[in-house]
Structures are given as structure tokens and as C-alpha cells.
Length: 358
Ligand code: NAI
Ligand code: MG
Image (cartoon, rainbow, N blue to C red; front, side, top):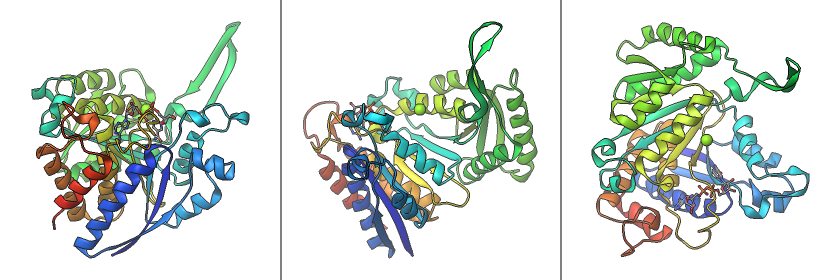
């Protein structure tokens, strides 16, 4: 198969980890007989330097014409206080909006050999394998009115939590589809004891489960869910939730396995190509030193193969290679227990490339 991939390396270690991801994609293409064609675009701080714009129209067009978008990270101290309030992060929000990405998927996988990197007990995190599906374009962050106003004669502020049924349906469907091809368990997280939007959410899930008889459905209140994620994360397969709850739960879940350098993410819309990026930022403290862990970006590329290109075998080949490399004891600095034999970004990438098999 021939696929066009828009590559937006961004800033800092974004450039280094995206390079690693395309190297792994090249090897995968070669093994499985595909052709991946990369089209590079500017985003973030570098783009401000070059175009005085964190997201030039040309970049948006490149993404819209692609089959999938691979993003590194944006930002850094150099662009923190620019005149006119222009910021690298505007590029990130802009591209998510331009592609109408309504679902954010964050898998959390507890690699057995890495459990020592977690702050939780080994038996709690060893074998964790869950995905949080977060609604990304509705809810409290976007609802109107959103404003400062006088309330009862004093200063006040209002945010609005709003969901349309169709917005709930499309994200819940995404989650059911994932659960169907995973361990067939869906946990819908809400606050239906106090929020009307949550009651609509719960009703919608109940209606839709008729279409997925093979998936076991449970509802959980968000306060309980946050506790259960830390107490016994292995009970979860797919968790689906609205924007605000998902923001908080996914950050909490991301720490189950230890390092930011290990965590991939995908954002998906209905028509436009999906966007795949590591959860971490541009890490200015280690930029240009070959210290960045490329595995989050590599695993993000694997998610692109799976969710945008439906290349499941290829994606599994990459994920298996990552596990093998970790089980063999190879480590970048962020996940190493001691300072012996720490691999550089490039060396780690080479290990993964060598481990990919058809
Ligand atoms: P960060 O994720 O860039 O770094 C946090 C810490 O984790 C640093 O010590 C860094 O060295 C380490 N780290 C991160 N990724 C790593 C990797 N792959 N391998 C090894 N170590 C890694 O977050 P921070 O420092 O808060 O933000 C730095 C810049 O990145 C800021 O300008 C921020 O706005 C931006 N940022 C961008 C994001 C994005 O593009 N999606 C997300 C988060 C932050
Ligand atoms: Mg967050």
C-alpha cells in the first residue's frame, strides 16, 4: 500500500524522536511491502521563526492532503514571551481544530521489565493494558457562555458544560469499536449523580450497547474511577469519558508506567487524517544531546498504522519489537536504573529497527 504521511517534527527533541519514528516506519514499509511518502511541514516555535506563524496554511494543507499526521512536539523557552502573545502551542491547538479531531486515544501499557520505573508497586502495574478514549472538542473547555460576569453583586466567572447527543455518540462509538477488537470491556466514566450531561452520556451508552452485544459495559463515577486507576488499573480495558474528566484521568494514567518518554497518543476525527504524537513535550533540557527516548514517538507511529491505515500486523510488529528491546534490557537515560550502557536516541532506534520482524 502507498500512504502519504505529513510529518511535523516541531521543536526540541520533537525533531529527534520523529526522525526515529520515520526510520522505524521505513523498515516496516520495506518488510511488509508498503510505500510511505513523507511530506514535511513547519509547526510551533521553528515555524514562528521562519514564517512568523506557528501554523502556516501550507502546513494545514499538507496535513489535509495526507493519510496520517505524525507530530513531534512544540515549544521551548526561546518562544515563551514573544510580543503579541504568539505561542508555539497555538500551532498544536490549531492543527487539532483544523483536522476536527474529536477523539484522543491514550494507551497505557505496563511493560513487565519497566515496572521499576513506576511509583506504584510492581504487582499493581505489571501487565496494565488500558486505553483512555477522551472526547476532545466539546464539554467545559468549549461551551458558551464562557465569561467573567458579576454574580450577586460580586466578581464571578462562568464556564458551560454542554454536550449534544451526536457528540456523545461518535466518541462512544469509537470506544466500542476499540473495545470490540481488544478485551471487550468498556468502562464509561461520568458524574451522573450530579451532572445532567453525564445522565445523557450514560443513557446514550446504554442505547448504543445494543449494537455491541459482545462488549461488557460498566458505568463508573469519575471520582471512583480516579481511585480505581491507582488501586487496580488492571481491571480496565477501554475507558471512555468526556473532555475534562479525560484530561485529568489520562494524565494520572500516564504515570502508571513511569516515563513520559514511553507514552504514545492518537487523535482521530471522522473525515480528516488522524494525528499521532508522543505525549511528552519538546524537552529543552535534553534537546540536541541524543538523550531523548524515541519509544513514545515510535509507538505513536505504530498507532497510525493501526488506526489510520488499518495495518494491524505491521503495528503489532513494531509494538512487539519495542517489548523485545525493553525485555532485552536496552534503556535510554529516562528509564535506566543505573548509568551503565545507556543508549542514545539513535542506538535505541537501531535496536527497535533490528527487532522488527514480519
Ligand atoms: P516535557 O515533556 O518536554 O519534559 C518534561 C521532562 O521529561 C523533562 O525533564 C524532559 O527531559 C523529560 N522528557 C520528556 N520527554 C522525554 C523523552 N522522550 N525522553 C527522555 N526524557 C524526556 O515537558 P516540559 O518540560 O513541561 O515542557 C517543555 C516544552 O514542551 C514547553 O515549551 C511545553 O510547552 C512544551 N510541551 C509541548 C507538548 C506538545 O507538543 N504536545 C506537550 C507538553 C509540553
Ligand atoms: Mg493535560
